[in-house]
Amino acid sequence: MSNWRRNLRSLLAEEPAIAIPDELDRAFRAHHGLVFRTAYRITGNAADAEDVLQTVFLRLLRRAGDAEAMENEESYLRRAASNAALDVMRSRQTDRTVELTELPAVGTHDDLSELREALGRAMARLKPRPAEIFALRFFEGFSNPQIARMLGISQVLVAVIVHRTRQQLRKALGTYLGGRS
Image 1 (cartoon, rainbow, N blue to C red):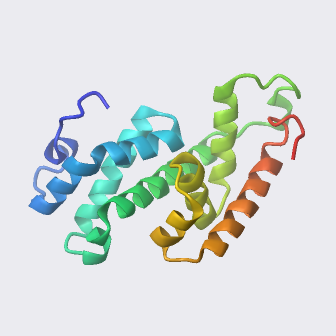
Image 2: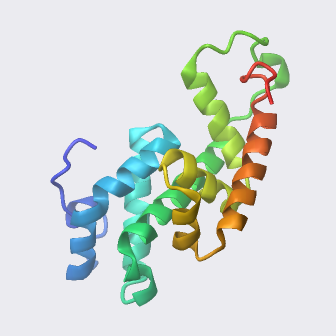
Image 3: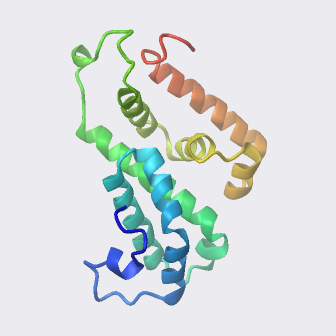
């Protein structure tokens, strides 16, 4: 993002008629960096991360007055950013299809950006809950107990979902991992 000091009003410039509640403006000032970084880690693209930032705060604006959303602001915004970024990755998947004959041969995958794109495509095929938990665990660095508290589910369920998701992604990225499982 080119100007980290911007405010919510400048982000929503195309929506000048919207009255922005002070609480939402405060939340934006406090957490816009967190939302941007979370989205950037998932999308790998600053422009997409800015789109996610705008999407998250527009959604929050529409839910103004929703006490549940703001109960744990940081957790809510991190999850919203993860989900919106995964939506971006899913939309990319439908835009970019590659014929199997165009894929490079095994052993030529040294380029990390290629692996990142493959991971993005694989994540875009995941169901929302496993994709969210995987992003929180491996992109955001949260532990299973922290994720369980954030999502209101058991640690065992988080562990099972992480394990199954890793297996799915290993299978999808088998070529990039050199056939390792």
